[in-house]
Length: 132
Image 1 (cartoon, rainbow, N blue to C red):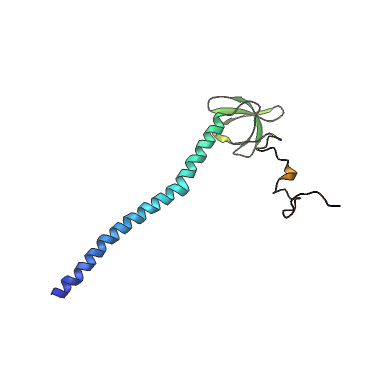
Image 2: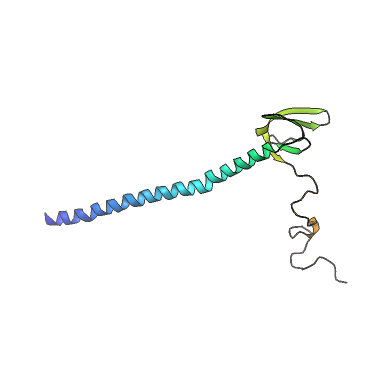
């Protein structure tokens, strides 16, 4: 009889530690889910809302459907776009995917040819002038 009670005690102690491990694993899973899925979605949604609130006439935009157009008029929840000369459509602000940057309005003033990712640039050379 004593042998069975001695064996039962370690098994019960192991169950208590296992439940703590289970709770920690679930908490870790929820944390990872939040960091990898929920937080980036919230950030993207916030950026989208800011972009939609900054829309103004004259900006070129890309719609969710893939149409490029120029903003003609902005209302509370919709935008009027000119998709070709004389062709205008009304679209919800939520249907605007992105604002197309103007040509020449790059983030930095580096010419395209001088950027390291330019296809004609040799990555091993310090300058791209020919030595004669």
